[in-house]
Image (cartoon, rainbow, N blue to C red):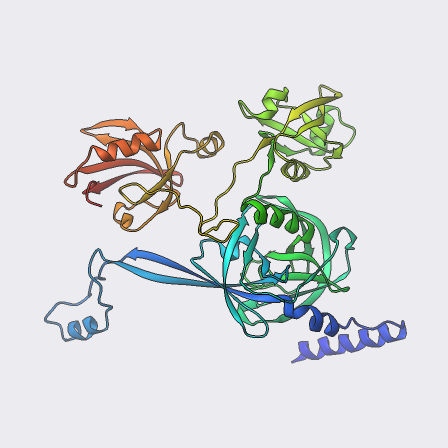
Length: 473
């Protein structure tokens, strides 16, 4: 009670001070009235199939409680898959009157059905035209015309301390409005090297993801994407993807359903003051190359471990996180020039930019809204892919197959997406697995009475998994 009185008193004092200065608190009503109809609620459904066996009844059959307990147990036949529907909520906003909508990639990730609800209560099934995990941007489409459309702003004109407004569906409460200020610009987050985030103190909660961030002119300047929280809810720090970055991504998603990014093939780290001193730099700047991947564009260009990349195509690399953004936005195949600091001297290096491998999104559709051609599953119902050099390096393996998907009937293998099949064992002889073709050949040689044993890497551990009835799909 005392805390509430103090807050009210503080607000009253601030209002009096603002009035005395000839200033008023901002009024968001006009902005919300004009721009709110272009903000949508997005709900997604994912169907998960699992095998669940009948739980063990903790009573003997002659116990009176046995019959009562059994009546309330779900009737489930051993080995028969059950379907579970995983539902989630998010937000989005209309960028074209014919139904193109921007949202976050994680909102539609793995969704079997995407439903869009407008402020006038109309509902539409949406098609995912494309999604990009690296920037967390997705483009979806509904069959509608004459929709209200947001106005786009310029994030470069945003100033720290400026008022901003978010509209979305936190916890499913549609058309909720929250306001705050820009806390910082150009934020880099761990594992998020391709987005210079806008940090705000706008109240953002689960369900706000994918919704717009407006400036006071009613222009969208960002897409609300993440919060920094120890509780899972709002704690005063939220991050938005600048709208210019999001629109560049959606242009590629609309035209091809995927995003092409430039790549050098180097591992880099931040240049500290101590490192700058040791390399003879006047101040900490640039990106220090620690590893050059064999066969990469960087190796072909003569880049060496210990080089400090200061500029790329005349764009200054102030800190290491700038380099992935600059290179990523460069079209693959482009002939570029880098300025590197090597052995106390700045020199120019010419390089042909490579292409970064695309991260696939489950449930993605093509640009025309037709379902994308699914990866083929083998006779066990497994979708397997061969890891590239970068993945093998990250996983610390010289060979193997990554389990990308586990489809109908494959749950009996006990394999999970993300597992890596390293070898198969036959009569005590362990044979390395190096290609999908080789592994499918092994399966073809087994009949329905055969048992196959695999050596599998799961996380940081290895385990043996036995599959019975290999030929009986």
